[in-house]
Length: 143
Image (cartoon, rainbow, N blue to C red; front, top):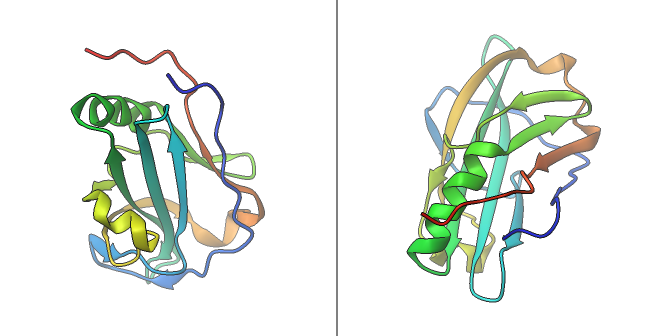
């Protein structure tokens, strides 16, 4: 069981134009690893892109560590967590993130395929100075 609320702060995201449904993770993505216990964890990567119309696009990828039990728990974590910039919730459900093999974690998720969704929100109105993964603290059920 996750014992704390985990957040990751990023001071700057370079927004680039993206029309694709997926993009490779690069150095402009924020990556964070969250442990469950000694044997399980999740690594998350999120990036921000901009459409030609100036709308916010969120792109994400994740990798699970520790076997099938932790993959199930990590899916619950994604469904119950959110991305927040300042006081604005950008996404309440992160299950759109693309699951990738944990081999990408050894290189900071660089090159992993991240799935993207258009939020429809104007990118120029969002305060990225306090960008966080707002991770649901629990409880989680191992079914």
